[in-house]
Image 1 (cartoon, rainbow, N blue to C red):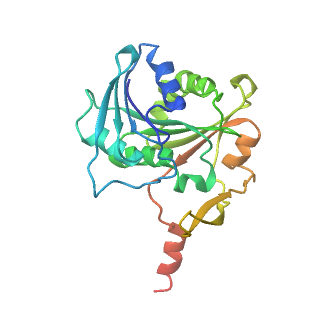
Image 2 (tube, rainbow, N blue to C red):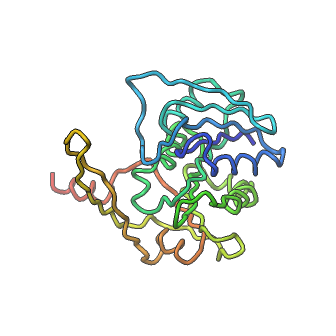
Length: 253
């Protein structure tokens, strides 16, 4: 299969590289990486309009080609699928494996999901892949999620059934502790923000944003699935139209 790998954590991110090695060493796929040169988390659907994009080319193990791009995750997918830089036309885009969850309202901010969304908009099916780690350490193990992609998600029956975008979150525990797979909906809890006020050495005031996302663990949500150690798979659409509200408003005019 012809596969494009991308992410928002950066070209050298361990999740991306683990996924590449796991898939490339099978010898069954043509794989290229086009990913941001630097960390681009939470960039959402942003694109670069007012400055050029620079590429650094890399020869990868197993004969693959890699491109590090001075842009956002969405830039990377646009360039890969429409910029004629690849030796083949991808049939599938895999975005990740992200270090951290993309559950519920995370999908509106996530660069990981944004890259997969761009692929779907262009017409290439895509999976957004995230490891729901509890802490960010150098010892993160992406091998369980990567092997699941290789063994399960790249099966013909899964690829045939998927026509758009799947947002997939993996439990951080070892694969033998996973309970299975659940098809889920997005949790509805919005991110709760805090702003810490500080001053720089020159006395100028600035704000540092932080916060947390309450977990919507109601039945059928992605948060619930992860809490119970299931792989969460949520199909996403590019159409944000609220059709019930559209019909309701139509009745008023």
